[in-house]
Amino acid sequence: MFKTFALDTAAWQDHVIDQGWAGFTPDDHAVWDMLYARQVELLCGRVVSEFYDGLAMLDLGAGGVPELGRLNARLEPLTGWRCVAVPGLVPDDAFFAMLSQRIFPVGDFIRRRDQLDYLEEPDCFHDIFGHVPMLAHPGMAAAMQRAGELGLAAIAAGRGEWIARLYWHTVEFGLCREGGELRILGAGLASSFGEARQSLEDHAIERRPFDLGHATAEPYRHDAMQPAYFVAESLDAVITTLLTATVPAA
Ligand SMILES: [Fe+2]
Image 1: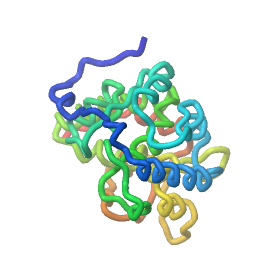
Image 2: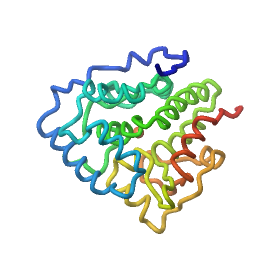
Image 3: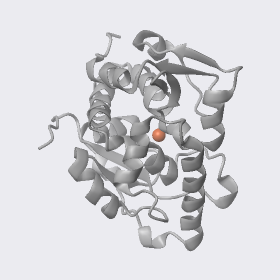
Image 4: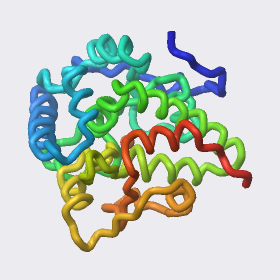
């Protein structure tokens, strides 16, 4: 039903583990509920409307850390994407190979109560709440698969930083316009209480019009809030960029 490409899938399956959902404690589920309630309230009117559509279609606010089998039962019929559990960050080649197969890796842990606002490594709240709602959107679902293919091609061409920057400045920390308003698109923003507000409200922060050349030339910070954000014309513009971009020669 959904077109997939026979690109390099070597070894990505080695990173997949059981989610171990039964091992999440009552406190883990309470942390999810607390984070979920806080972000849903904060993001109202601040995130692209397709994000809220995804939250509802996937029933992510049902209570507690989502069990991936139940989540996939809703997600897969919509766009062919499914989530798998991983123990943490996976190597770039495995990560992009997964995306190229419409497989999204999700950390098998959630932050502690004393880490609500800062986390070095993405947890399942970032991975699921931040990313998965947009995977229910057909256009973004196709664009994310294409990001995986671009990632594999870029790494093979020795241009890993090119795809890392493109992904970062769109899928993770991108802003875009919707009906003339500035909205959050990226999962790193949607899942962060502090940075969601900074990205839209801090007058000292630089917001640049998105274009492929500038975004892929711009380094980023993975250990601190971003000093600048790229603003796309629309969600459709981001999707079109990802679907039509080609890896430049090294
Ligand atoms: Fe992410």
